[in-house]
Amino acid sequence: MSHTSHPPAMKMGLPISDAKLGMWLFLGTEIMFFTAFIGTYIVLYFGSVDANGVSAWPKDTDVTHIKIWAGGLNTFILLTSSYFVVVAHEAMSQKNFAKARKFLWFTFILACVFLSVKGIEYRGKISHEILPGKVAETEEQAIQKMSSDIEYRYYNELAATVPNIAITDVDGDGTADRDFPTDQAMINYQRSAALPQLVANSEGEQKEEYAALLALDGKVASLREMISANKLTYAQAGTLLHDMTEDEDYGSILSGLHLAHPILYGNLFASTYFLMTGFHAIHVIVGMILFAMALAQGSNLNENWSNWVENAGLYWHFVDLVWIFLFPLLYIIPGNI
Amino acid sequence: MDHAHSESHPHVNYLFVFLALCVCTALSVIFDVVEMSPSLLVFAVLAVAVAKASFVMTYFMHLKFEGRWKFIILMPTAILGVGLMVALAPDIAMHYYDYDVMQSQVDPPEHGHDAGHGTHAVEETTEAHH
Image (cartoon, rainbow over all chains, first blue to last red):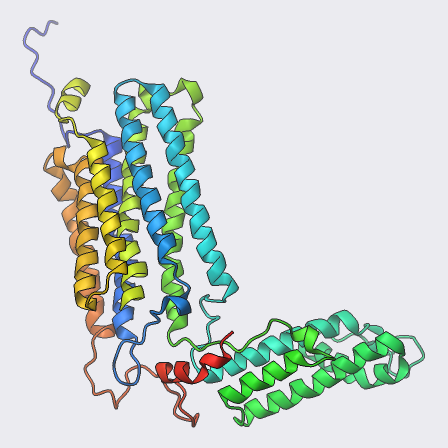
């Protein structure tokens, strides 16, 4: 059998490598993934109106703890890392693998810096409780939040101070007469109910500690009553909390508590913020893994990795693209309107 | 094949593209600092973002030098992405009713005093904040 005239094999499909086609198809789905989040944010921004129909989305950067400098810095970091990936890819095609490795390292380090800046921002949000479901949106919610913060501190202090035997020993002979309750509300109730007895039976510093808790118990009960009777205004709540934290007996238990500043739609803001920046950060981490796998080859990095670096680069540029839109939409525009 | 492939990529001065991107970022920051009307700011900042995105896609992602397959892959998803936003807008971002008839419950009516008016509440309570 001889083939003298061999017809050229028919080339099916697109004139690019399968890996690159796969990456582009994936990036196509990623476009939809992120436009869904960004679109949701924009639509909710306009949909969240106050009683006058004006958008009441939280925009003040002092309220939302959005740091424009951090967004700008991260934009610059990602742009620079994108450039380094391009340089690395070019070096790969010139078979200058040492240079490629160097610039892949630079990219990897910049990705770490990006995540660090993001971490600083997240820490600020967490410390100010700008978290989904944690933000008080109205004055009533702020008062409720204050009350539950106080109760949380109070019950924690109770748990640390009141011994379990004070609950289980009813007749005071030092032995347990009944089972320790399983229900947390019942435990809290019985601990506070044991306080008068403990004050009567103890001395010195211990007695003062129990007496302070007993005084706080009275305050917590009256606060709860005022809230359920709707008798406490926001300004009164602020004064009340201030007086409580200054109290010389139990003030130390409540130190650092403050009445939250109501942020209308603050929870929606926090949800969209963390959804968008969080998924973006996950993409950054995935990109770092892709680069790390090429870097793990060490000095064995060769032309077989050219496609890998190209596709990881494409992915990285996409991560950069998303941030290019997040920066104005999340940082600059809300901060200036 | 590989050779022909690399030949089809004219040399791009990537450093120049990178500097252009830096200038664009600086422009965004300038727009942030300079006083201007909100609508102009939104337009300017988003225009800069689109310019940056097109630089990255055209040169860094080599789309300028790719075949027409790029349209086949990217157009449907771009259309669907924008379509999703357009589809969401009427239900959530637009309002068909007078504001006397609230679409979303901002102010629980059973609580008497002026809760819910966010800006009002903020003015009254700044002294209690921190």
